[in-house]
Image 1 (tube, rainbow, N blue to C red):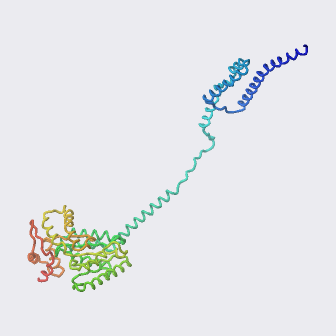
Image 2 (spheres, one colour; image 1 turned 135 degrees about the vertical axis):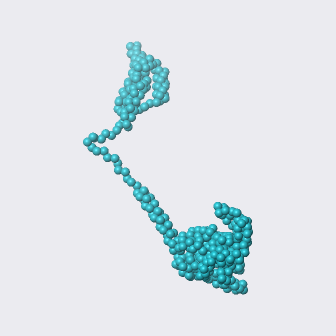
Image 3 (tube, rainbow, N blue to C red; image 1 turned 45 degrees about the vertical axis):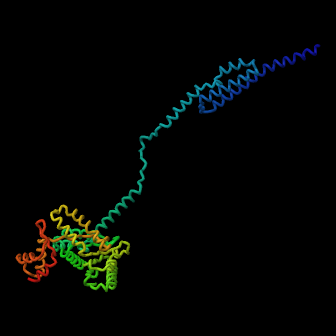
Length: 426
């Protein structure tokens, strides 16, 4: 019996010791963990920011763990609850951490706004600005372009001086009567075309009007002037009734005209000159010759054939011009440009119906001459023949011609065509 009693007390004591040791071991483990966490917090320089959601989550996890402990060990529930309420580490109080974080933010902001102070004894030097070379290149390019423009303008002046168009204009205004608008238009076209040697098509000018109004005389003045400023080889006057009087010889005339134009154009291109072709009595040309001329007027040719001037003289459209002039006697000079456009609108279809080559031509109509213009023609012819310009003889010769009378004005029917024959009778 004595031996059995101690055996019954031993399990009971062992059980009591285990009941007391398990909470103590839990407390020891918690204390060690607290110390470890405290050391780790002190070891870190920058506390980590914890969001309220994370804090709340950890708090809930901690409560769940404590409740589980209470279920297994009720004797330690009160102790653990008090320890949890009093512990600053397991309540996750972030007031201290938030203040440290705010302090760190302010310190970081001050570091950003810190200015670099130079010693007053030293000099401050701004960084040197590196100038781009693109500006110099741009200025150089602008200078080159301006120089090229000035050079081109000087070359234009040189070309015009080579042909002496100012002298030609003075001669035309002095010797051509009653055709001021036509002369101004001719000179404008010549100046624009002869200003350069590079063209995309030849210049084709058509003189149209009734007989005796000065078309052939203007062609003769042009041929005379260009022969004086250029070689005679670069001016061709082609009269149909003289160079090709027989229609049976049309193939030979075609070959001859084509050969002359080609040869003259080739030689002029070598010497950088622009040849002049004056074709009179075009209305008498056969369709074969007109087709031959039309091929030279096209823009899709070699360079030498693009640098040429063709003057077409004909009476085609003369009756329409006469009718238009007599119907617009009262129109003043202010409306002259508008009247000219109306006249071109009338005669353009007539010319293109005669032959399509007039589609490539600039048409210049020659109007009727008044009696005063005929008197000037007679005076000029008498001076050319060396006769004394007697006013009575001049008026007598002028009265022998026929005139259209309308609106108080007299227009010569034949113009100055018969003036030479009348003067020779004196």
